[in-house]
Amino acid sequence: MSAQEVNLVCENLLTFQCLDNQLESAKDYALWLASNMEISWRGGLIHGLLGFLREPSPQHTPRQCIKALRVLHEMTTHCTKVDVKRLVLTTELLSLLRQMLSMSRLRGTIRCCCLALLSNILVCGWRMRDAVVESGLLSELLRLLGHGQHEQGQVLWLLYQVLKYKVPGPSLYAIKKIAQALPALLHHSQDVELLLPALQLSRLVSEYHSAMVPAMIKSRLLSRVVRFVLSPVEKVQREALFVLANVCLEYRRRESLFKFPKSILLHIHGLVLGGRHEIRILVLQLLSGVIDNRCIKLEHFVELGLLKKIVLCASKQEPSEQVRLTAGWTLVSLALHLCRCYLEYFIDCGALHAICDLLRLELPVQLLRNILVVLFLLSEKHCHSKQCLLHVMWQCNIWPKVQSLQRNSNAAVRTLSTLLTSRHSMELIFPEGLVFVRM
Image (cartoon, rainbow, N blue to C red):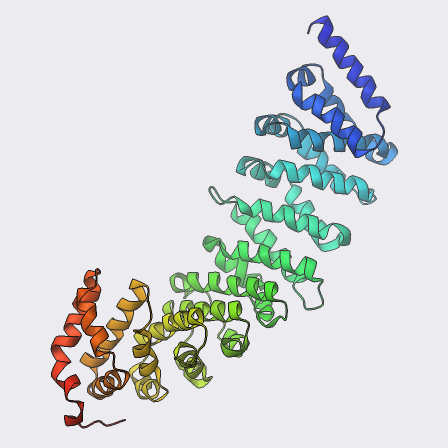
């Protein structure tokens, strides 16, 4: 080092010793370090700051320890990610943070400073996340989550950062440990300011499908989350529905490994018609996922009266077109998977009328194609349903619409509409000449 650089280092060492405990002072000092990183490293300024974090400094000279932590926090806020990685991977910083957080009589200010510094490290990417997990800091964070009442919100945010980077994702060990700690926070007397981030973290856990069984089922996290589907707080309700939807999507591939709780139908039963607009849409989307992935036997939809409610949502009586379209997806999914023994009930409750009336709306191509598939299957496979279908199509006056679909830009839609019109045109034109079992 040159004489000028040595003088700079000595001057800044003296500056730190005289520094007060104000945040602005720490920020000014950190900005100088961040703009002169090479001098700071070669002059030992960084290692000097780390020295104030070693025992017994946090206990005997807490003011110096807090100053050092604040400077490091501000420095990692303003320096590059490369400098943060150098600080984390080439020094004992993580080990020192773990030792401080494990102390039984650590001052709250020091603990908060440690967590703030850790947040700057975690946002720098998956390599930093892996280094934090491997250092043992994850275990300390989970311990604080269970016992540190004042820092729970801060710890939940840090755990969210641990799971946020998905490519590559965290280890199965980290996902399982976080999932096992969450159920203790999910109770109805919990403060919403903690409950909501806990559910958001649960939602993130549920997105790791490879860890679904140990993280969501064996940890009983799913059974805790289900309760909040009926929460009066819309944001809480929404997060709980997202978690259920994620678990539902994974069920089909792993159905032999866990039993999907059919009790969720009891929780969401009243929300199909009685929930807020956005919640109704989420519930109907969830039911579509349950049906498509065969999570719950479809007879439960009939037994609980859910089918009638879905039909009502998809019918002309529903004022919201968005709810109606979403219910249309759900109803068509139900029609495609429904057992033959429930077909008569399906027709009696007005499901065919609702499906036919949906053709009058501007539909996504996939939904339009699915509706035509349902109509074609009903007309081809079951004699009784064929007669009812033709009568309903005549009643709803959708024959011109079906004919016009032969000019649709989608090949599958053109084919299906052509098959429907070519096979049943005479019966649709002269419905009075047919004998219907049901009107």
